[in-house]
Length: 106
Length: 122
Image (tube, rainbow over all chains, first blue to last red; front, side, top):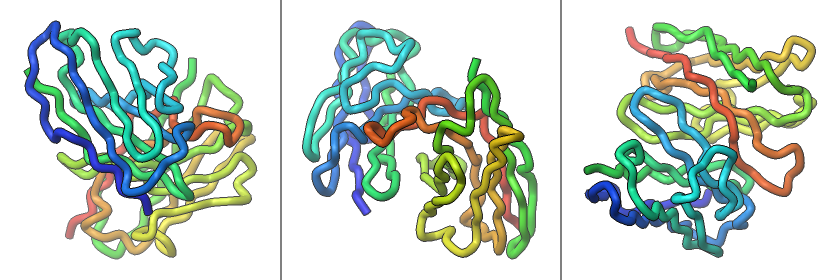
């Protein structure tokens, strides 16, 4: 099973700043099978990015996914107050696994 | 509008059984693989099970194999998760989630239900 390690666990920034979230896999992942989700308190996760870099419908363009192989990044260019929530990466390789999450806090 | 509505959660004793349902609307459920994902209180997301469009193929995480069964009724647009021999560690919010692609080119979940809470406790 591929393990996804997200870093940092918690990221403290201010509105307007740039956030860089990392997702590292224990072995190379097909980039078509790498996705990012956002989860607000008390809500279901919401798809942000699929195929490592394609924005889902409704995802603001300040969110950008990148990476290949075993290293992937979610970049939020100018943080808005509503962006300070949880983010998960996910991969598929025979089965799905999620990273442990990064909490973005003010 | 795509909607996924889970039901069937509740309090159950260790060793007990529960069946979750997920009613799908707003899309042709028969064209998409479907999935269950859970989240223990205060914890991260954990994939539980997946089922292909026809229901012929299913897959499970190791910790639920032999105890959980995923199935679907395409005519009724409903996904199910039969859970037997429940353990305390199965306590979680259970979400159903829709495959985002009709092909195997991409793998991701583009719609999620609001979740249903399963609590396993004496």
